[in-house]
Length: 254
Image (cartoon, rainbow, N blue to C red; front, side):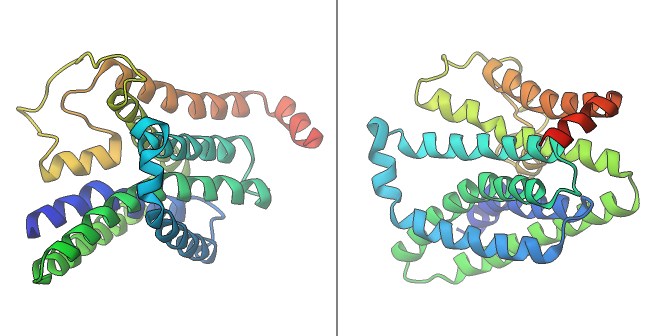
């Protein structure tokens, strides 16, 4: 149970800490604005968990997968909003950050809650569960702090933005896996197999998956969705930079 809990933390909750680390590294994102969004995320997660059984039964048993897919898509919309609207526009900035927090934070927190509550109710001795949670929390916080230090002290804001779009694309690409599970996307066609180098189930595999969307045996749908979700916000940023006068007219109209 100890190892399973630590691995689950790396798989499901590490992305939330990485997202917070990235948002703190972005310009004009206050820590106070993140605190109330974390509280909002926790409240919504608890409420959603209480209705999880009902949600799972919707859409012929595919309700949970569809919900997670919609949330991840909303996170991608959030990063696009941050690219389109400058950080000086607080309303648009706030909407983009909120979509990112809920879109990535909610599905990952629900996954962990399902495991944690299940293990807590089925095991009389919860010592290993809480120990694994403590270790996983410590690892996640440490990685997030190291990432934030690297982004704020050793790379430019442009590189931080590029990495943020890569991270978001890595999360949103999981929509392909979810839709393959419920047969909305076609049967997975494996593009390559790198599991003999780094396995998906290893600690490094979970870390790389959270950071850059690493999959040892990705499907074509996964690769295409990953490239699309990565390319669009970067293309918008490039257009915004190359045509500043036109973009200023768009902002005036808004």
